[in-house]
Length: 413
Picture: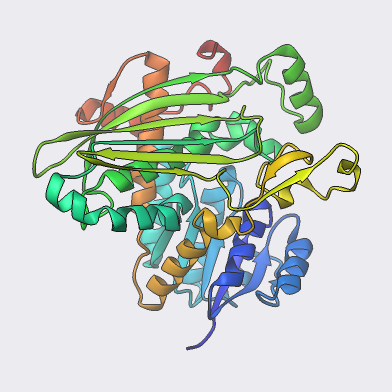
């Protein structure tokens, strides 16, 4: 089998994480990168871990001319411009076999719809990268419980939480560039994975129909004056002027179109989790059975005392978003695989080789964007949003949350 050549657009944190995941994917190489900054560093990193020569290209078209598929890992605010450049490259003759976009597909429903439109204009297969659906723990839980689902009935409640102490990059903290706060950043993960596990075994990823969403958003940690000052100094973002939510929680209600049964997906996300580092907690409850996942439960723990802490390496070598380099540390020695990055790459490449969309395509990403934006609308209006209402669907098409407009002070406590 010939080697499949991926090209990255963007060279930040997520690009490095995805490059790390490629070490565990056969017959795939990182052949090139284009980014406004960080290209040389990513290229050197790719070579050092043996995932490809990763040539540095001066533009999107140049990259598209030398790879089999491109991965758009650039910031949210640049997605449409980049996808337009990819579409132009395809029309100019680039022989791409697919295009990948990291979550979220768009900052608004309108942006997500535009990305779907641009992709369709190229006739390229697409992949929407939502790593948690590809987590081996999720897949193993569903496989183990498949007989119980068939005999007792499907899951009725799924709960998912993703929390850490905050993003790495300044633009992520700026709601006008990112598209909101933690609901936009991580709520999309929790909503998607809950929807996925609630679907009855053997059904497609959008089988259950979203019928309602309720949500709350709040600014709890990073609105405190002392913390706000730290954020301004470190990231250059002033939450006294343009705050985003650092906490969100809510419930999405889904309907089984065959049985009429209603099921619930509860999500909770925060940028204020000051423990070991990134934590993903998920569980599912069905009639007579359940599963539970907590990524901070590792088979490896290390202890570093105060006297030895000065020699500690970067804290994030132990765990993504780690805030400590001493004490009792949970160490995840293969985070890229744990969080599903390896399997989402495998899925996309296998699909593109066959000329098909990945398990999750751009249209799926659009549906997740609708649910996240429905959450913002519910929080703003302090009511449950009826997703079956035609007027609500029309409103979401042109809706931009007050937080994303830079007016978060009007709705955040």
